[in-house]
Image 1 (cartoon, rainbow, N blue to C red):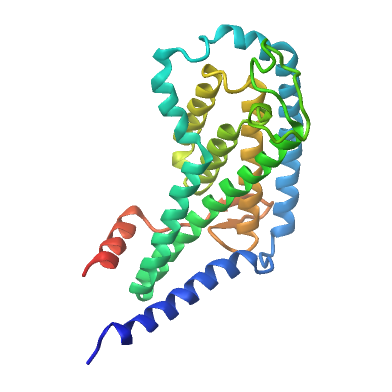
Image 2 (image 1 turned 90 degrees about the vertical axis):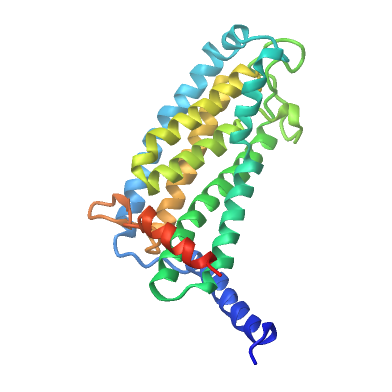
Length: 279
């Protein structure tokens, strides 16, 4: 007779192996033969783009931050309630919990599959893992920068002031730079766009909308959201290199360009999902 006590150990043994593999595949030593080329390619682009963006951030602090505050509606304006809903789509807690729940679902379902179906399902899991780690690392770095820099939010101190700081305060009112919502939304946008280039412009539009909502709600200065976007981009590209160097979700072309590996089609994913949840 076959009962739960006999089938459960097999399921949990497979689940344990799948979880262990998901962790070790990301931590194993890099093996791609072109990883040095990719590192140089990424470093060159990151330094150039980062330096240019840093100049923009400094210019915004001196030329636009205070002026922009005066253009926005007063804080607490009742008609802005739709923006208060929209802005939550860039909240790190919500984004990370959704990605984490999706990862857990993929892991729990994987032991029910066999052969090609399992391989397809786990390839999706690797891509979700990349997005989750990108957003997670970006958020952690952003929080460290916020607490260390301690830039005051608009109107902290009673007046518009782009240079109101309380370093190492680790206080919410001195957590303006960089914008956490901008970091989260741009890390998510660039990670998704790196995997599925056709979605790149849609995801960038999403990130820009989130950033604009932070400005209109007077939660951040313009330089805060630009800095958050830069941080999200840098982390997304660094994590892309990390995965590509281990032949995960990405590969490296001659010359160092990193491109996504062909993944399962949406039709294949739906078919496998139906197979996985079928009784």
